[in-house]
Length: 224
Image (cartoon, rainbow, N blue to C red; front, top):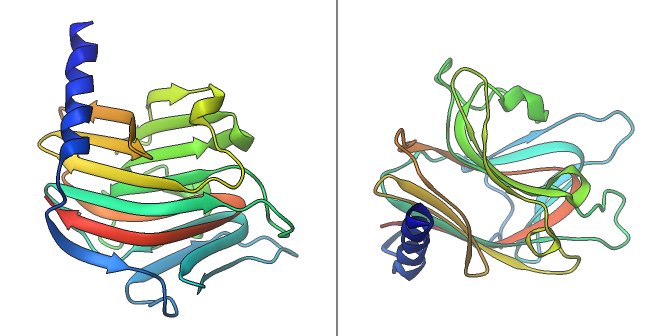
């Protein structure tokens, strides 16, 4: 019970945190800058996949796996925010699943992180934090830490409907890394918090998904 109260306090503190200095923002009103965003799309023969900006949104429309990395190393106390929705309508790749994200990612084996094809298993040897909302065709929502040895333990997971994806719903996501703790917020609710004794203090952020069509808007990164 005491540990639960401490984690709840950590979550409340993170939510109350006023954003500090804005260090990067993108409203996706212009074509995607290849120097700022690195796209890795898994090839799928016969499938149509794309990553582009459209009507003020970053649109991930892929049959296979996709990662869109922000090509900036983030370090120290930071806060990342954005709005995101999984689109389920008449699109060829529409599927309510895999609203995923990486943060504080680094490659212990190479200086260049951006060497992958977008296939999910190729990221197993990175160090990073990962949240997969609505994974496994919208059956699980999980928080993992990827370790250098190739393991990726589940820190916490949800299986209940309120923590899975809803069709047509826009989610405001906030990710905080601050003073030894990282937390993940959805529409003001703290889904995950982790007081990490070996905190990942620097690395890259990436939007991640597979076989779906999603929109991201109002991307912001703050130094706390």
